[in-house]
Image (cartoon, rainbow, N blue to C red; front, side, top):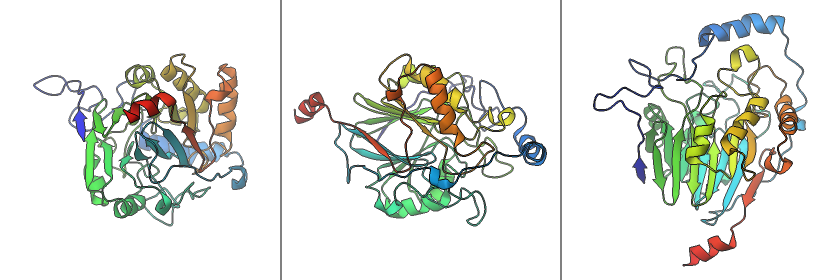
Length: 353
């Protein structure tokens, strides 16, 4: 595995990158949180919810399930397949590698197995039915994106997998069992076989407890192999960096963007995109290209915020129509659904040379 860094200073006396917090830790360089995270959570739980009852949720059966159609043990080097397991967990098959994003197979995204919001829809594929996992990408340390129980199971089932994580998250990941862990800063790259993985900016935050906010970094990821490319946004609010990500790492075949976890907006807008903002982010990423497909995530799996569980995809489709975007560029998946880009004839010719 080869690694290339793109640090924006911080060495040889240069100023540290803007997202590095003075004295250690990390921050959002565009606009930090308002209100303060602990105060915001308190106001949300104690004041907002008592005066603003949450809308009724539908029956979980509203979310369909599909049979996954990933290749096993591996897809062709020139093929691309994306399978949605649920929430922000995808199996991405690109460049002959099997890559997992933010894996969580647990019933609850919580440090306590019997507490926290329960999964609405079972995982789209059993963990032990996955093909050999080569790479695991983590966007940050929140429990719905980095699940300790799943990490331990993955470490046992796929001990040779490489885990790519944002800065200062490596030590915690190693304590859960994975051995091959690499930390990356924004715009760092790692090359694994023919796949170049880039750690990209995001606007979010990190914490596993009450006193570690911002101690580790958060990020998104891009994966490129030849002409094939995928963008996985991780967990993020709308921020000014989407155009730069598209310019530096695009064009993309698939853009995996979060659309849920946005109410109440006065608080969540600093950390989570709503469906309308996700459409705006897609436009920034694609720069008018009619090729990429948006695949929404971060909805329909766990009840984390106040909007009705079925609202995000409904609002997304409405925003998509309002933006005048082609229907073929929107792929709202069922849990377990796969979408593949077939191997092209010129790829086969090149691979046989």
